[in-house]
Amino acid sequence: MKEIVVLSGKGGTGKTSIVGSLAALARDKVLADCDVDAADLHLLLKPRLKQETEFWSGQVAHIDPDKCTECGLCQDLCRFDAIKDFRVDPVSCEGCCFCSHICPAEAITMKENLSGHWFISDTRYGPLVHARLGIAQENSGKLVAQVRQQARKIAQERNLGYIISDGPPGIGCPVISSLSGASLALLVTEPTLSGIHDLERVLSVCRHFGIPAVVCINKYDINEENSRRIEGYCLKQGVEVAARIPFDNIVTEAIVRGVPVVEYSDGRVSSEIKKLWRSISGN
Amino acid sequence: MIISVASGKGGTGKTLVATSLALSLKDSHKVTLLDCDVEEPNAHVFLKPAITSSEPVLIPVPKIDEEKCTRCGKCAEVCAYNAIAVLGEHVLTFPQLCHGCGACSYLCPEKAISEEPRETGVVEMGQADGLEFIHGKLTVGEAMAPPIIRRVKQQDNNEGTVIIDIPPGTSCPVVEAVKGSDFCLLVTEPTPFGLNDLILAVETMRELDIPCGVVLNRAGVGDAKVEEYCLKENIPVLLTIPLDTEIARLYSKGIPLVEGMPQWKDSFGQLFESIEEIVDERNRSLKR
Image (cartoon, rainbow over all chains, first blue to last red; front, side, top):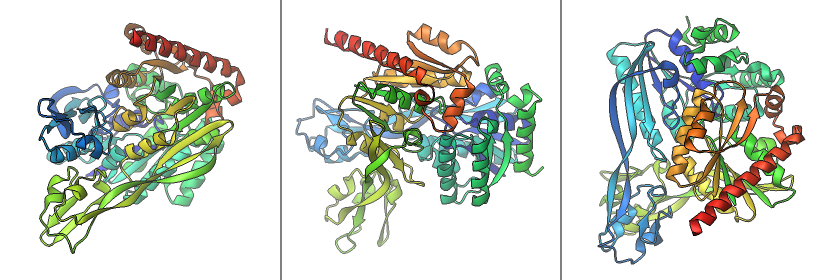
């Protein structure tokens, strides 16, 4: 089983459009949406929900006002400035439980936190594992880990060849959680200075965790000079540029229609994405 | 006044809006730009600041004095992040999991735990073309963005107008970056992805009780559903930027919109005035 995770560093480079198209092109796969804060893959894959599970993770401190003597020790010791006027700000609380251990009046208890939900769905392209982190919640990395674990389970049970994951932007906790132990990172970039800067950082993260990477330049023709810079950089880094997708409004049109672009059009965008899949699947 | 520029979805134009807004105001206001997208900071690509100082971001992690330690296991029991384990005669620490809360060292009955700093990123400060500039960078391979974001915000002395470039998403880094703001601009695009993530961002700002308005970027493609949603939810669309090859070309080269196309300065000036009006009105109604 091969697990391919699509990342970019910078947001909005086209990860989800490409994953949607790979979903249409690949056989024998399970799909995973690891962008749990702002999941969009379902808008292309139109899932039929089969299973919904609550995701409980982390804790939030709660002060019982009847027991609290307002001694202020918790406020002094909390390093996250989460306690003010003897009340806990649940948004700032990191769930470290320190206050609950030191309260002399035993007025502080920790409450389990419903951080989100994860789902198993059927789509016309195969099973999809996805999730929704609760608004302003923590522990997105743990929810991503849960999504991947479920995707692996499905792949094993049904003897599927691929897990294709849509990753989050950035390089922090949810990205590391999406990436660690994957077979291949597909890095989608764009020929803008921001895109290049962010590609370099996300490629460094792949290197740090020893995950092989290939690059896809999306909208390569909006600045061909920058595209050549990316190619030069990738050559130096020994990373293959597996596809160069041109800019075309057809991609946005396909999103509006809610279908993967390879099913919407037969143009250059689609042929380049097909080339990309042949390259990474070795078929 | 603190104005955040956020989006939910990545790549909608947060940095374009934040840098152009800051540059449009700098002649009439004291302006500080904070780039709190510490995983992938990009404002410096456009503003090219002269960095005058930098500070490491340090998380205090436990250091165990093996002589004093009796292997009682209290530290492992109180650590909510599984960053300490006692295995037989050995105490193992996992600094990457440690949030630096200080519980273990405080609660160790033998006072065998001290704390040592571990660097997870850096905060850099400087000036760019009449702006005060501060950004943070998470070290590659590190997971936790919020401590870097906190440090970026602590470096700011909150004078004049502060514009914060927020990371994408809706989870803890966004909350850390946006909290305390007087207003949040949500930059989106007229597509189903843009709309879906805008709704999540609006819910986040409502949870945090921060008033918000929308900047619609790349207008002219996609559909009208973002505008319909804003109308229904009574969220003002304060600025519309069309899909335009010249704007995209400037962006690709790292040139701020208002520098490459100065005619946009007035629009950003008006955007700021609209925000001021909303914030003033809200402050008046809160006093009443």
